[in-house]
Image (cartoon, rainbow, N blue to C red; front, side, top):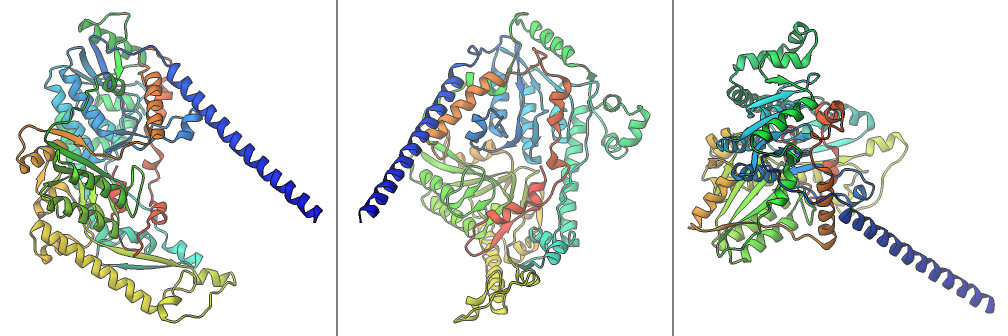
Length: 621
């Protein structure tokens, strides 16, 4: 007994020791983290000032999105850059403030680190650049390399500079997916697909070895329209013919041969850029431009647009009447989800907040989503109906994409606004269940057991039996009928009219207006004004309704801001980076090897396994 008691005391002592060491280690790690934070907060540069007669540098990093995700604290602690996106609103606000700021002589576009932006958001930034130019201030662009999206924005500039070893590449719009049907057959994976309509292309990578004729025709007309809009805008901005631009792209190899392979000279000779200059020459031009505006020769001549926004921040003063703006960005899932994904519970909490806030008289839902869970989409739409029933007008503003489930949540709004280049529609629904009975049998593994009903025997290793398959197909067909009915009710269309433009077909915003799927073409500001009009408001404020940051998220945000003050200043004055160090990040790997996002299907959590998703829509960035 004594021996047992001794062993017990020993293990209790060991357990307490391990618990003590664990708590000690956690506290040491916390102290280390706090120490790093303090170093970051207090070791930055001297406070920045807006340079008199200087230039604001619009230098987006990563993807241009409606709402930036929170940074990864691990990357911050390791010293790695965690800036993977830039909010669209930041760019628009910086241009608006720079136009009215007497201290600012001009704006420079430096777009080498912008990796992606939707065609719709491209047009929105383009309109903002046009608005800025009415101020009469300078607008210049410089790049070591211009990709397609980067060049469209650069084409708005008064002067477009290119490095002598640079390039302008305009490959046109397109998107390709990887198809896995043959691979799945070889692995013995049976993918059971349940769908309605002829164009629901999200499931085709798992059932075919290439696009169906219907999906190809529908997708082709969309990219052709977007490409035509692109060419028309660039031609107007640069005073070129569309024929010349088409020749530059289609016959680029021949044009390069004529220029002895000199990509920069080819772009210059075709009028796509105005001058080939190096980084030192660019710094001289900036000093000359700033000097002409009265800037001191020995002072800074540029300021990054993120720092400029911080230094010109305006406090939000609540007004008696406000229009609330809620952002719905990403795929749609059930439950709580982080920024970048639309969680039904997360978004519905914001909608309820807007409904119960007496100051908020109308709401604009800004949608940028290819869809996702059908159930989550309906849960969100029902919450929006509650908002409308409370007497508050609901206006939807479509961003780059509002398709499938993204259109589902928008369909019964009081008004829908879209950009001409918005990708929308894709009214359809599908279910997809993989089973592995054949592949497991090849390995000598079999599933067997007992059941009370045919439905209880259906699982991933026993296969899909006929009764369960009928259940899934009936659910998909019912889901599609529900989708048609809510669009019919919300858009005042007959079921036949909705079905004719449904069945998974995708449309541009311009086409959606023609078919009656949206009410107007315009941007977020237009939608806000319309919401105020519907609510009878003349004097009102605009409030962004978002989930409040936790204390740890606020701390991370401050770290990122401080790091930005230390690192985001443009290096055009210092010349510390080589041309190629700045040029290499210009073309993302995703633009070279696009493919289907397999992780999306493992991330989805619809308990009914019913989805309304436009996979092709996510490729047009």
